[in-house]
Length: 155
Image (cartoon, rainbow, N blue to C red; front, side):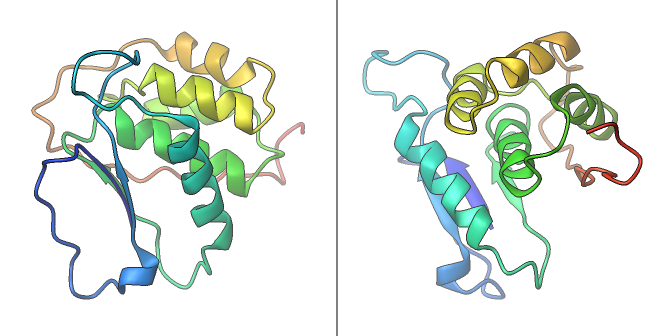
């Protein structure tokens, strides 16, 4: 489980998930650093996310969540997917995200950092921009991001 939550948000890990299988990344859902007391996503957050998912044993599903499920968690899910499947095509991944989560508007700062750390050369940023802002939601819309079908892709 990956939790992307602000410093003072209360969240208790479900008892069925062992502590060592839970990564908490404390950040606000903002796109720019230097906005008062808010914590912007940074490289350390994304490095921790990438390391965590690459060490994931895949014995159980990976749950990624944030407060509303609109911005931070969709961005983290995309980054996690590329960390696990580096041969995936960014445009196809963005299309899969939009199909799975019509409401998703991935946090641009997380996407930019993920693009850089995963050496996507701007392709991830460009792909996420193509899907645009997601549909309005009340924040209770969960989704499953399917893995790539690498057998049928051109990569």
